[in-house]
Amino acid sequence: MPYRSIVVGTDGSSTAERAVAQAAALASDEGARLVIVSAYIPGEGPTSSMSADDVPSDIRFTLTDRVQAEALAERARALAREAGAPKVVVQALPGDPAGVILAAAADFAADLIVVGSKGLTGRSRFLGSVAAAVGHHAPCDVLVAHTTKVDA
Image 1 (cartoon, one colour):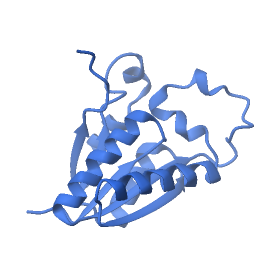
Image 2 (cartoon, helix red, strand yellow):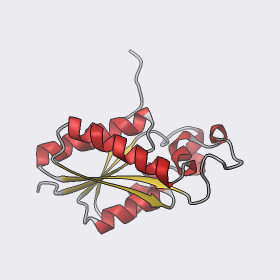
Image 3 (cartoon, one colour):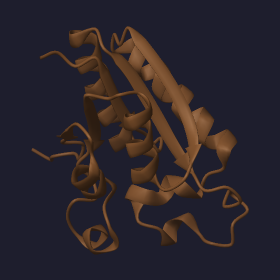
Image 4 (cartoon, one colour):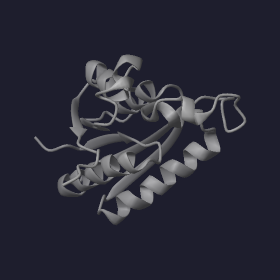
């Protein structure tokens, strides 16, 4: 059964860009719509008193404001189009990353959610991983894309 609607989240990091590229390649192969989402927390933009360095990298993008989240999503759209995705929709939505990804999956009747593997191990595992949360609550298939660099 081919995928018709694929959702992927981005925070602008290199690992998120790898997940977007993998989702875009699948969308291209399947002729599917690709929905790219970026989450933000209203009122917690760059002027927040919390340093981004104090936040685990897999949820760091929640510290950006709406304008920055929209810019991240638009950048991901360009990457997806370069990878051959035929139909790309972008959204910047308020909320936690996993919740935003799951909401987009429901709104766009996704058959597949692509999430990056970063955050599934190590310290961030104890803080809660976006990939793990999506995997537990997804209404559709979930592809965990290997997005961390492997040194040869």
